[in-house]
Image (cartoon, rainbow, N blue to C red; front, top):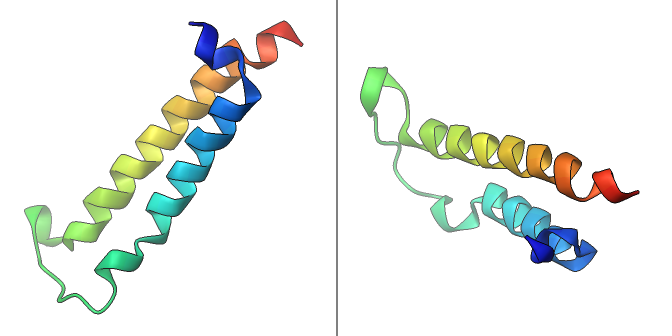
Length: 67
């Protein structure tokens, strides 16, 4: 994909992941115990970490491959 070769698209991708990791909209929220007696925010951050790992994998294969 041609869009993966632009540094501005990667800047937007990693900035978005960073802003999603701040989680400022869930501050002062009650803790809800979910699956496996873990707080629900843990699953949110596990999903973010998987998205970050995927983004870094694609970044190294697409963007660094041409340098």
